[in-house]
Structure formats: structure tokens, C-alpha cells
Image 1: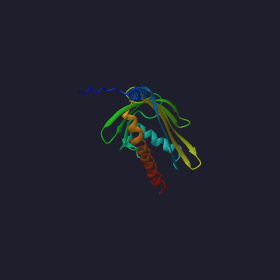
Image 2: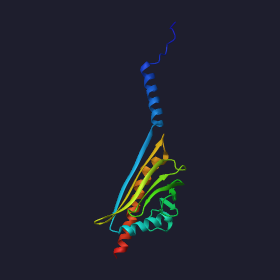
Image 3: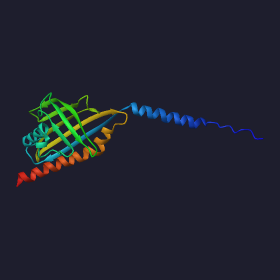
Length: 181
């Protein structure tokens, strides 16, 4: 009669599984960052573009440059301490989050903002309008951090960012074409 087979667990296999589990745990705990760094150049005058941005930040539904198909904004406009209520539109849902304007530089046409507690990402950004020889440069820069796996971060980086800034630039180009006719 044969003796029953012993099943032995390979030490290397156990060690590999343990290492994978620890790595996954550490990855989920580690803070991750995403960055948005976009620039749009236009022939519009700086103050004219700033006025359009302020209009968009008060009520984007009335704006001729804002990509309302992706995002709606309501606020009291661009000013320090104002709260921006932003509704992001995805193919599956709409979600509203808020930001607070932390700094407003009227002379240099720029403002900074931070995410509020209702936002799933923690971060800050800056929007500025500067004169260049060819017209105006709109710069939008922001950094956002999260832990774990964030569907919001995935949506922002792989769906929203490219579409939003392409639509914003196209809307500005359409406005340039109308103003030069």
C-alpha cells in the first residue's frame, strides 16, 4: 500500500505571495500625485480673456468659451475666498465638488485655488493670464494627491483633462475667428 502523498508548500511561493501582499498594501497607503499643466495661447487681449474667464467662473452656462458639456461652474466670480461649485459631467454621472479661491492677483490676472473637503482629491492649482508678444497666454497648473485607487484621479487624468482643455482651446479659437471678422 502506498503512503499518502504529502503536499509541501514551496517556501519561495509563500515568500513571493507575501511580498506581493505587502507591496499591494504599501502601494495603496502611499500618497500618489497627478499634475495638470496646460497652456493655451491666443490672439485675444489679456483683459478680454480674463473677463471671459470671470464670466465662466460666475456661471459657465452663460459663457461662450467654457466646455459646459464637461463641466459647469457657479460662484460669485473670481475673488479671494469665493467658493467655486463645479459639476463634472462624465458619460455615466454628474458630480459636484467645491474649491475655494485662496489668492487673487488683480494686477497680474491670476488666482489660486484649493480643493475643499467634499472633493475626493486633495490639491491646489493656479490659473493665470499673461501678455505675450502674440497676444495672451492662459496657464493652468494644478497638483492633486490621493491614496489608494481613486476613480476620480483616473477620470481626471485619462478622460477629463485632454477633452476639457481641447474644448476650451477650440472655444477660444472660435471666439477669435468671430472677433477678427
